[in-house]
Image (cartoon, rainbow, N blue to C red; front, top):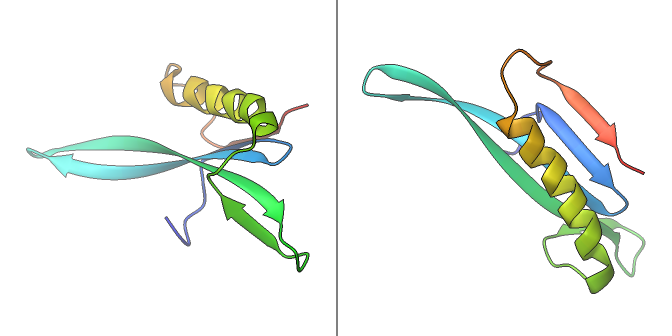
Length: 89
């Protein structure tokens, strides 16, 4: 999904969940397929930002929160705005 923009992104501290949307065709029908991508951001020893999916115990509640928000976005009814970014407190 490199180079594509997410349709929604949820962040809390170091945890981030982004939602990407693809169109697929099957049996002559086109469907929208949404995928949730999770990552944790951190500074390495050289003060450069890196990403990982590995979590420390204190990261788990943040991951649960952003993934819950992403799940809510993906599963809620049609008719809502298609692009959103939310920084969670």
